[in-house]
Image (cartoon, rainbow, N blue to C red; front, side, top):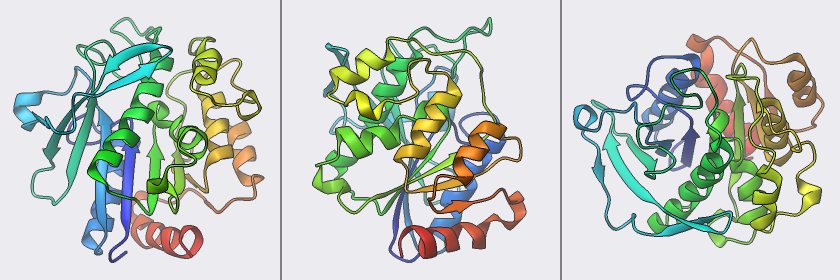
Length: 269
């Protein structure tokens, strides 16, 4: 992995959020790349659950301050950063008072999906790429994990299709067990269309539940990782028949060599 740049875009990562398959792998895989000579950046949302003082987050003024247009409304983008203790890994936090302040991941305290989860996902996808552009850090791979990241492949391939920073970037998406079954707002289609994304690229998103977002991510990714043994059978079938480089589920303790081989021999070769 020497010299390769891998951007990790995730719903969650330890130690900033509780341990899960997703949050653990969002830490372990970048650590492997760093340990083997690669460069990494990690992006997650700045949920209200994340304790800024404990984890020593600070705002990066030179990266903050721009507005992202979401469905014809200007939404301020705030960027915060922290370093994972004892590791040479920086984590960037996408923040906005309306979308993330005082909020949990996908559901409120009563277990109900936030009604603006669709806009949160759009804001996150655009916020990550706009920040990477400001950093002038062109990734060889963007590795996407978690529900709020699943619009990233679509935005990279369509909204940012002509951006020179991403001209040689490959998109890899990891899939885990579905975190929820309910649908996001059906207005998602019109909000994506507002960004100039053609309706022909939005097949299957008329009822945008997790599986619809996942199928869209498969369509717009260059490689797929089945990172969980409990992936929905229909999604698994789509992955196995998509004709793209695919890595089947492996046990966590065996991932290092498999991930490096997948990156180097199937995605970047």
